Image (tube, rainbow over all chains, first blue to last red; front, side, top):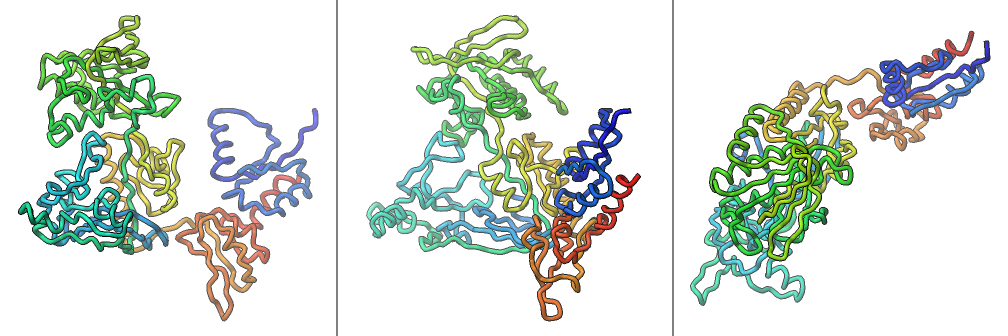
Length: 65
Length: 466
């Protein structure tokens, strides 16, 4: 099987998370290796979160907000 | 309106503007500018004598500039409270005072003695009046500042400069007994009574160039006008041009059927392409009739444009003052179309009527009743529940740097004295739970309940560690 990157998605509750939710209810699919972490706002994202994700094994981090 | 003015629990403040708002839900402090009236309202009896003797003239806003009013005036005969004001921009006394520094006129106060005309019988005129600023403390606020009808001058294809092409609002005033023609149906160009008239719907509404929304009330008021005209002047020919007829609402379809029965001709189809002025003064309306599947032309004496409902001129400014956000079209936005139709993004601020979007009278009344219930229910218990997702400062860790104070988008953080030093404090009523302060705090002194740093880091680890 081909390699797929592991992506941590840090999603704002009001836009990105709502969009991901909408994508779900519209039955769109997205790769199972994208994992969503919900935050109340992209303002809540600390640099440490991104560093921690990359340090512990994520291939990429997507911050949406 | 009269009932509102008489109600013991309602204080009606007219001829005033909201200047500023401080505080938050339950504790608003509103600064209101009461504009200078130059008339003592405790003395004014609303007799209208000053209006008869004032020599200055200005366009009458209430009749949309179709006629003139004096510089001292009562806005309209049913105004509440029925008190006069002086329009300082057009008053001869103030104009001369500004230009030359000398006083002139003063007829409304002193009358014209040599012609035996008295001034204000109540002695209410006060040229020294100043703008007055008052502060009121309130728990919640309802915005209901209404709308503005779109101007006809945007639509060059409909010959807007011809006085016989009027907007529906102007036509409403022409039909009114207190309007510019005192209720006489006549053309504004030559004073003749029109024999044929055309009404054009969706002027500026449902049009990508102007407003994509439906103004909702035009179909019905066009038919109301048609019905009034047909009942009063049975021999008049009426052509009603619609894109399609929208009569959703209780008893509205019956109204439409009855209007058609009275003999008004309904033309459904595309938009009217042009209104041209012919050399003999008649107006040629060109359109397409979907039922005939062919272009149609009709010569009429008068054209009424049902122009779109637009947000009021200062709606955006009002939204900014109260931090209530506006939608794409400029109306103040509700939190949720179905579940929170009267709440705004600012807690404790509610909306009713056309400030939220186009709507008719029954809907406005229903919404304002809902808004007043919601506003009262919020403040009457004296306590308010908040979301548990909020920031809290651990004061002993706070280094008093003030970064969070600057960053908070909701101005919810202040520096407050604690054991002799200033420490940050989050006002829970204002905190919207975004967490920006917790991320930015260099001393990690802010705990964000529900989304603590440890919780999020653990979530990330759970994902990444295989």
